[in-house]
Length: 465
Image (tube, rainbow, N blue to C red; front, side, top):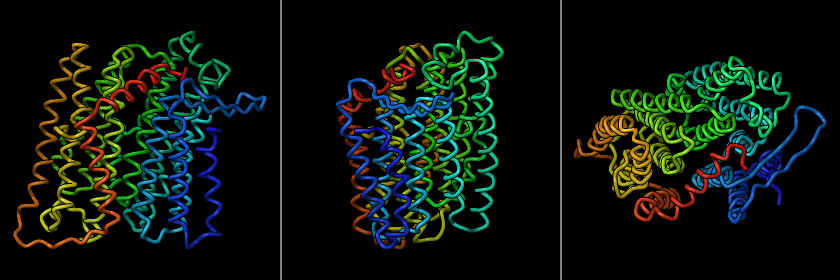
């Protein structure tokens, strides 16, 4: 069994496009589901699996699978399987099939890479795929969004390259294990240059304040089904790499406190912005930025396992919830050709409205949904550290979040005459399964909390060992 398959198979599948035009949607599901099953076979993993290709150069190819990276691989392949199942009754454009496979290969490569140059390669692959995804609607807004995304992404790439070059010139290696051992021996100005470069490069992609000014317009210009990939997979892959590098470089506690503070500010700014928005896509985008801020708070520690466990739990729950919400919004936009909040007062479907209730209340962190357990665990972790300011800030900002969520849900009661929605059985089954997962993790969270705790313990190992 080779972990390279998680990267190689999706790329090779892209070359099957000319030979299977009529069956791309089935082939897409088969690839994603097969990789999910393959990932699940690694669950008994006790020690890291390392696969390397030595090129007798400073640049090497190294992949490392441990419980932390496996967690993200399973999450990503699960979401891609759901994505392909949702589209199973729709015709799949050739470019979508190619892009989704390259996308899966790139995010898998990001979380598996054991050297920083490979991280850069997959960083660029994921970025280029995202630019093309944004332009797929082929209208003025989509092209404008793609160009803006490309410009901002190029800035992120430049800063990331500066950090990588500084590491190689001063350490002489791009291997993460060696970098972790030698980083603290560097002069303070060099350390600062590297850390600032990585913060800007990955901060832009991880969508954290103040580097996330571009994100909401991209979400609004992009198809809902693509947005779920951005929110549930891409941002999480960048967050993983960002904090993976932070732990490897043994960043100072003051820097971690700075990241946590940035997380609180990001949460607050995003939820205040959502409060004033009249477009559901923008609301969901701001919500994603807010939850990323909370994740930053949870991951900005190295000695509070409860806090880290809550952050890992929230990553999984938020990803699943955003898949459900964006797919539900896709049904509404397809029917009404709009994402203005007024469409919530125009449809009649108890099923779809229930799905929105479960998803939005889970994001808010109310019982008996999984989001409640995630946020409660994070708050417990903060209380253990006596970070009461962060606790109060999260609770106050959550009240702002509650305001626009209940306002949105209340719109469905505004009209007596609503248009009845007929929802495909396949979509109903998928959305129901996602809702059941959210409720189950809220009612019986302990087994998954134990998994998240193992992931957290591995994650802070820094270099997977």
